[in-house]
Length: 90
Image 1 (tube, helix red, strand yellow):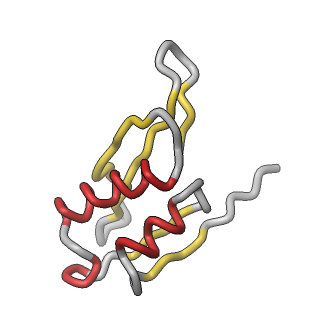
Image 2 (cartoon, one colour; image 1 turned 90 degrees about the vertical axis):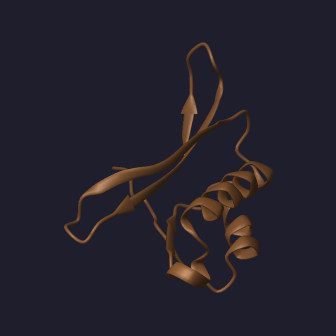
């Protein structure tokens, strides 16, 4: 999600939520050394443990094709709605 460029190199992974009033709020944030499948699998396992599985709650995922995230969602939340967001930079 976000590369760190200061003293601590690495990546920040984040899960963001939106409530019925369209307010956006952070659900979970984690620091990892490298963004890859293993990092996303670890993050999603903890996230889903805390918020409940997609089968219980009907979670939907929106992502922008982060390294390893597509595979981790497919494995840990099979059948969950997953929308790919394409950011257009001008």
